[in-house]
Image (cartoon, rainbow, N blue to C red):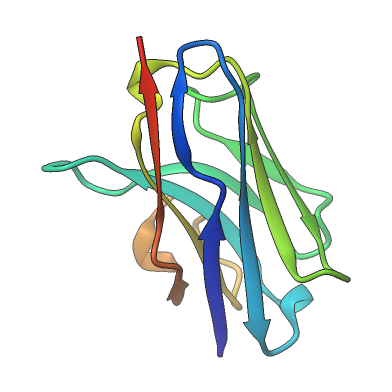
Length: 124
């Protein structure tokens, strides 16, 4: 299995940028598809971004397309989420998740391993 640890969250103002990182340990990181999700109190976990094992394929939620960029460094066992032009509605706990098998990338239930999350707060 793989262990995931997110970092990089914080409190920023609207229009600012943040870079989240997801550090993995355990089995071969390059075997895993990685997704970023976010969740606010009382709401379901929401898909944000996805990257395939090589890093050559990415998908984004419409709400973040053009502002967020997902990338990975398999040699360093990390996945990053660069978030630009942040909006108050981006406020949430952000989670990275991993899975081995190809599956739907938008559903949280498709992922086997999760980090503990990192809080992102965007003030207006």
